[in-house]
Length: 390
Image (cartoon, rainbow, N blue to C red; front, side, top):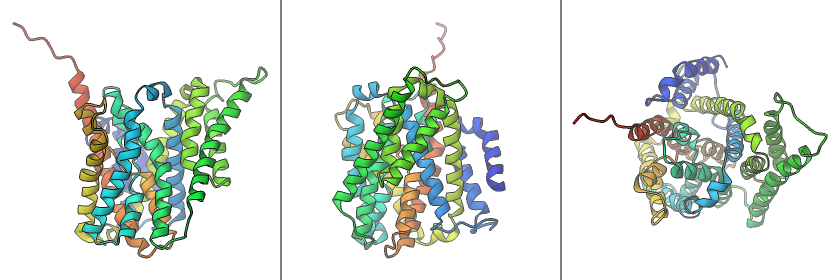
């Protein structure tokens, strides 16, 4: 905790510099975690199957999903729903297929094991490209695409992970169970905030300015715990819950924005720090150079190629497709799914975890270090050029 507190304070000191350079607070947290972990200084220990890391990664992920839903503008989504739909319905399965092939050919995994790795690496997480998705100088279409895609693909990837684990020798599952989880998550995410916003409109209820932001926190807790108790898809529930609250009460997004942003940023750095503690030299080198070749192929080939293919003929311009294709970082969902694989008793689960961890770590480093550079390039592009004297 001392090391994490120090890394937070350092992140504060360099945050402005990080916003305009390749320096990244996420990479700082990842590196700090690795430094104090068992692989280097050995000040603290977190096993690869640590329940604490799994809980922290899930908490960070669902918090981010709720906030993304809260800030989503449905009116703009209705205007340009085609690109996000293509990314989810075409690019995501295509990416999963390419990553499966790469894992089989490069790492010599069985097809079942390769599918497990591909399913865990399928969801994207623009939290690690926040300087890009929050920059108004960047075209709105790729930013909206990345936000909607990441909000929904976590929930859609979970059934694929469960099926992949079952195929690879883990606990069996059924299509009915998966559909029921999705349905329960969606209903919970819609019903809970809808009922609450109906209640708060009654004439004898009124919130103060101090307590208004707590509305979103309380609803997030109720949505998450209800969906979990009912064995629903918590990812879908949280994104839907935030979206419904934002639509039903527009002031909720404004009231919760500042506090929610600070909370989710702290959770992001905490989960990244904890993940860094698990990145020992053994994890990073166990599968050799080929693991890094595979990771690079996932980031540089699979995601950009799949998204570009899915957006052929869309409204997005070439540079917008390139930006959206590059910024498909792997993050909390992949960490969480890797931990799910560990707990499933799939044969070679630790090897599969190490492969997913290497790819996720590389993604965090390269994507969170280039988002501000791309945003700055767009900012410079939009800056008025001085008139030259004739």
